[in-house]
Amino acid sequence: MFAAASSPGQSRNPLPPASPPAEGGSGPPAPSHPPERRSTANRTDKRPDQGGQRDPFFDNAKYLAIVLVAMGHTWSAIMSDSRVVESVYRVVYTFHMPAFILVSGFFSRSFDMRPDRLKRLLTGVVVPYLVFEVAYSLFRNAVGGSDEDITLLDPWYLTWFLAALFVWRLTAPVWKVVRWPVPLAVAIAMLATVTPGIGKDLDFQRVLQFLPYFVLGLCMKPEHFRLVRRRAARIAAVPVFAFALAFAWWSVPRMNGGWFYRQNSAQELGAPWWCGPVMVLAMMGCTLLLTACFFAWVPGRRTWFTALGAGTLYGYLLHGFFVKLAGYRGWFDLPAVHRPLGEIAVTVVAAVAVTALCTRPVQRVFRFAMEPKMEWAFKQDAAELARERQKKESEREREKVSA
Image (tube, rainbow, N blue to C red):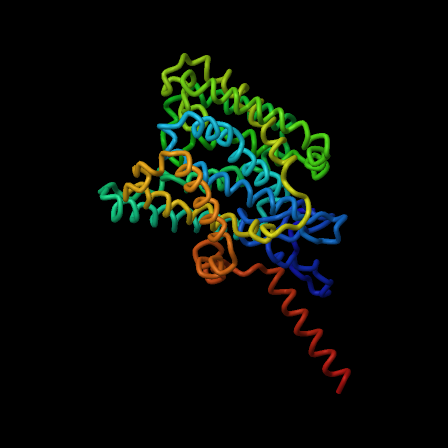
């Protein structure tokens, strides 16, 4: 499947067909040379049994997950006065990013070190990381009144996910050859929680603690997602989420919320070292259960928001400016915001805003930063050049015959 195209010899043997980028995303690999999209964060499933059509389930899942991300960021600013909001916040933070990471791993199954895929990794992950890390730093200094230096090694706010995705994607070929990829990834995450010296470079503590979900996604198949999309799973998800909300309510005054962010070691959270590995296992169990329940509730048919699933990277990176602006301007400190109706209003505004940022007009405006082509920055593939020469020669031969 991953064999690189060879250069043409003197006999001019036909070259393998090029894999054109899919409109709107890509997904599980097809029997040979699956189509891929330029952006690695905005990709959807294309199952072979659907004739290459996008599976709306994955677009729906990505959109709903990004809406939860945006709502969670607003809840974090208003939850100090509301135990109810913080309880919902903890439930959502248990699974929303792991669900997104798991899907990202699922769509990384075809990744290898082939030049065209490395180019997409650079243009779809590295370039947006550089652009938005600088943009967020300038925004923080100009609007937030900070004077911090701009650094590309210490991701700020939302850009950590792009740095992590870059590292995870590069390691994807490794996880395909080891015998027990998921247990090994879990062991690495457990060791990370007892290693406070990892530091903040590329937010590596988060990279390692979220690693098992990416590796699990690499190991999954389409039928695994279909298991949780049955009616029985949707019904079972109701009491599971109810219990999760009740447990979160109980945990608010008793449990350090820092465990949900996966960005600190046990020692940095003021806990004994052995709590780190235990919490990795406990959190992973809860996370996978709630993630399965979330997927069970995701519609499998086309809906009004299905098309927005292709723009989740835009919504993810852009909504942070609005959340931070509201924080810098003190809008979250208004008394009305901390009343029940105000909390509901803030939640609705966050959902509407991130939805608007996932639309096609926004994608067209910001595509230069999210999905740049950058053909000028790369060497042209020899196989692609040979295909173009063969195409031109074939056209000339047809013209001669027709003449």
